[in-house]
Image 1 (cartoon, rainbow, N blue to C red):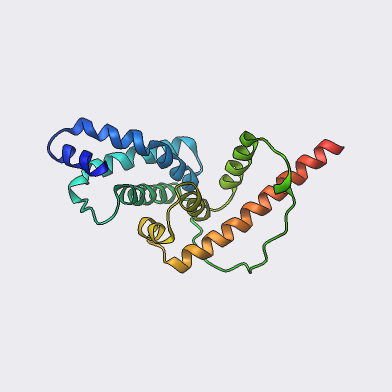
Image 2 (cartoon, rainbow, N blue to C red):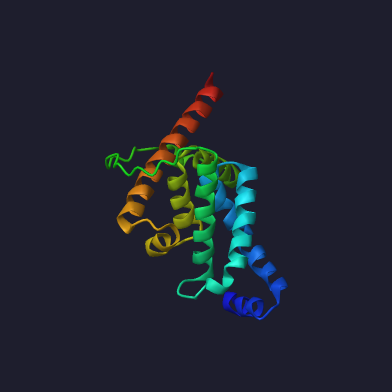
Length: 186
């Protein structure tokens, strides 16, 4: 379907680009948020990315999916925005060990909306590269190879980032539930 709209746009029907905006705005915003962690900046990054994709559409060769190509533009733009703001981007890949903490809070009965809230809060607290990797792998269901295409990171680097991100999210959620439990029983 994407290729059909690409051809329409390249043939002069620029209004057809609305298809891509509708299709990719939500996940694009989510990916931008995972990197910049600021709503307004994420919206700006998303807008700039759509403009850049539109302007560079003639350069799209179809060697990958349109979504992969667009997410690469978006992620590059998000990291550029962080750099402009002078925020340090932690892409250090030290391995923190393979100890994954045992956590019992996953067995708690919490509502689906609460789960989303806690997970989104945890994703805001972890480094941008970890949040991005988790969103691409679990929410967008990208393979390791697709994440490599989108980010430019190596496969082994992505696996380490995903591993570290899962540990960080577990720790944040563990602390969150500990705090909530203590608040309930005081």
